[in-house]
Image (cartoon, rainbow, N blue to C red):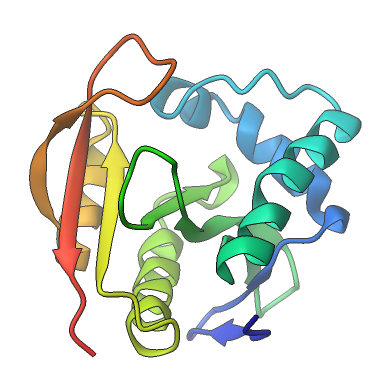
Length: 173
């Protein structure tokens, strides 16, 4: 397991812990997240901790990566998440990001995503990266394409009733 911290010009990216249950609760209940990703039904800190144990903490244990808290260097505020996820129905890890409403539009998702992409390639030595996104989520589609991922088709995630876009890219070390 790689224990690390990434830094960008304005951010520190670190693994989420159970102490970040309030951050995850805020992310999972942000109206943009619910509209573009889905309603996880997580409504309390206890729900968030349980979801983190089954999700993020399990990803770290199984794969050595997962979601990372985006922390402002300026004041230590946690403003969202960006990281790598491994889904049972996708062969390769996918990159995902979510920024809380007060910090949207300032370029933080892109700053974090480029750092996570470099980490995936250089430190984790992943060979391919994917991204999944709702077709109507223009800001996320734009960032995914800016990262260098290309549209690979439409897929349906388990339990969903609509198709979403799958993007992919090869990572060259």
